[in-house]
Length: 389
Image (cartoon, rainbow, N blue to C red; front, side, top):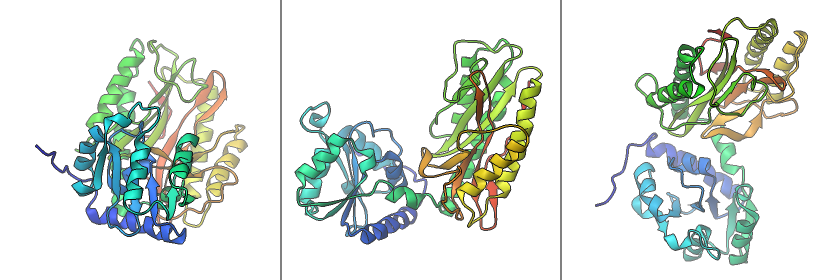
């Protein structure tokens, strides 16, 4: 019995619009075929969100075909048929003999497909930044007549500007993130295990908000005393205690799209130092958001924040954020001094103002925002406060 086609997050016309933009870029680079192996880019071009990218797979985009061809592990092919807008004949499952094989792997199946379609001696785009040196060499060795062009960021640059349909999904993801932060504020209490707090947060992220469930889990970081001076650590075996601080980072997920948020929680009265840092960061956040408008640069936004907190006696060494979308981070732009990327309408960013000052002291606050025609729309909306519990 054949698997059915599932509900699509976007209409077929939306995916064809995205592919048209990619094909225009391919024409500029004089390539006939593009092999996309970055999982986020595959999601963008097809709607596929299943986690199969830990083994070789490739989306073959041809300038001469309306739909791309997706070559992936055979046992994952039904997921591609179910999730994507692609016709069944455009999903090719390669055999299990290519898994755990020291001599051949799934990229050999991709290369075989290029030969069969007569594309192995044309201009070929590869996402070399997402291929191992060994895999890149395989493409070159098996297609000696191909003119290989590095297209590592070609799709990412296109998807950095969201369609209005994507912004709707980002808003839904943001509402889920907000709900999870508010649930955290309800359950972080003295005597409660950190694991139990995270279980409640995870349940909220799955149940979603406003009738829209979460469709995946993004990374969640629970940095509690004395671990608030670090940023990417999980919850521990410990319990919450009076006087503890918790720095929480999480993201709501809808159809692969992530909206991130960070908030700081103080179990009991916060220290004067933490309160002063919060006030400085909050002032900097407001100034940074006011700097967002089409034509401004990432550097403009970041420096607006840096100048503000420095007036308050604090400094932040790390960047202030980055482009966000599918699978959290987009490798296109950073909110940092010197990044002259120009802001454009419907770009989305995580304004990440985490500040890790000492080994045992730090603070976090962040928002996910959209660049509008005239300024900024903040997608996340949990209270911008130091939660005192």
